[in-house]
Amino acid sequence: MSNDEDWKVVNRRRRGRVLKHTHVVSVPCCSDPQTIFKKVLEARSVVRSSQFFSNLVQVIKQTSSSGYEEIICYGLGRFSSSYQALYQLGLLLELQTDSQVVVQIYDPVFSDLEKEVLTNLGLVLISKNEEGKRLVVRDTLFFLPHCPKELFNNLLWANWGTPLRHCTILGNRHSEILAYTAVTTLKQFWYICQITPALRQRDIINDFKYEDVFNNMAVHMFPAEKLSVVPDSIWRHRELPVYLDDDELVRS
Image (tube, rainbow, N blue to C red; front, side, top):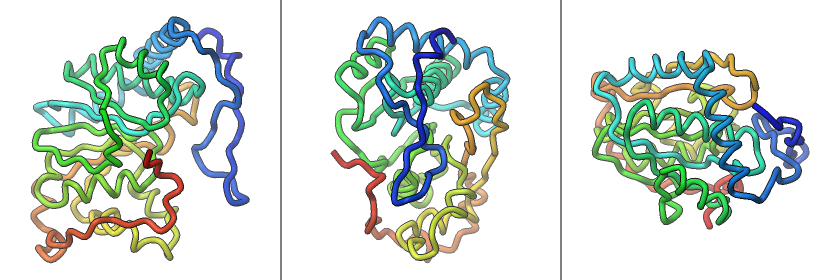
């Protein structure tokens, strides 16, 4: 991609530790919509020609022989100033082209300029912050690129039970979410913990040119035959998730 030198990358720290997958750009790349649009198209081209994308498409097609009827993306980030978000947007656009379905997208951090670019790219802006709490009734691919685990947990809650058969989640590996969640907070992520027996996780080989763009990602699905083995007592649990420390989940 051209103009890679425009991106200055730093580590973001919180509470005295370095968080995994949290490289951010320290200064905005530009504020011109045409320049941003051009960068998106360049990033998209790089993604399209990558072996990573070819492998991902094969995995996704293996998870749903009939394809998906919609794609929903939460938490993409500031693609006008973050190269990770830029390439992730490139991937989203290629997934849309491959599946020929409507893509809906939301992130509360999007600027008006970024919303304009997304609209011009043919994506549908979700009007409010759903916090991942969307019930779906048709086969849907959710793209959660390096999103807070609260979004994953909320999405499970919203579709808890048989509706999960309509959900496929492309995002951080469920196994790593569990591994890196403090034992003292596991109760807050009850749905993430309890879904394990009904989950099929397909890890994606990360051979993309920038290793921190698509690292630790997997395709997650919930086949009917695995959902059926979960005890009814688990499905009857419908308590709304409450997070005592949810500073990673933007609510505005």
